Image (cartoon, rainbow, N blue to C red; front, side):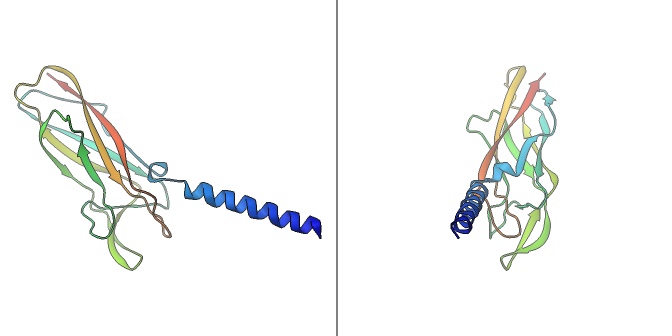
Length: 158
């Protein structure tokens, strides 16, 4: 009898530890964001195009930009972003339903395509373009805490 009680207690502790580990998982554990090109090049006064690649783990999804029910993907330049008039084109995702709400989900690998104007007086050489990519990952049962994933794009001004 004591052996049975001890085994039940051990199993309970192991299950609780597994649940705690799963609960500590965050969106950064299942979504990766990176620069699609290692370097973008342009001259002062020109627009440059660049892309941020999103890689979402199997069985997980994020929400399309502008989703009104959940936190949608968003690309935000850092406060000291040196370029002007940034525009972003987000993946549309596919229509789905989550907890009874109509949503647009993004899964697998996709890209945020963007462009920005290099200011006329910007110095030649290499510059860092830093961003935060806001994501909230969900599977078919739960959502993880949202996060801003840091991404850096290298810019070479000619």
